[in-house]
Image (tube, rainbow, N blue to C red; front, side, top):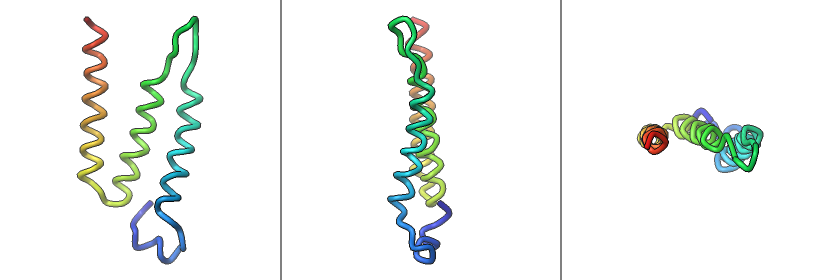
Length: 87
């Protein structure tokens, strides 16, 4: 998604493009999740993939403040997860 100004020329709907990107990333994330011995693995990786796609789309439409906020919150959640595991 480069800019809203191109959507008029292409006849594309930005919401539809975003939904297809997130659906595709959802399938990739679903492939990352594994179940092994009554444990589910890969949920954090799948969520990180989805967040990365969302941040990329925010940058693509020029919402840099939203992308920065998403990046910071994503990094904080990953750091807090590591702190929680240590205890």
